[in-house]
Length: 101
View (tube, rainbow, N blue to C red):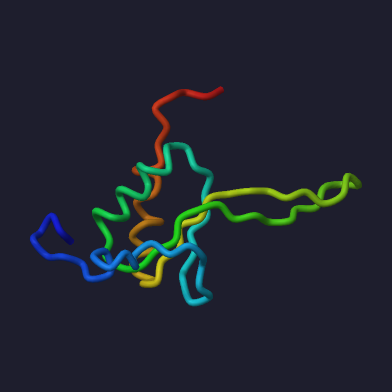
């Protein structure tokens, strides 16, 4: 982590954030309440391994209406411990500033 004076080789070579989810990554799916930048900045600052952040889609069946695609956001991590830390702290990172009724 650069804030501690250590350069992360993955970050230096632009390899920390990946564009797809490799099968060995641990996924954390959630509904995004803040800007994507808030989440990715937290990941860049507090974690050190490779990660993916983006939308994922799932088919969901409804009663007689057919099948619909449902989107959610996903953060996936190469290091399972980082996925655990992220999921435990997600409710403190993903907080909207607005009250929605």
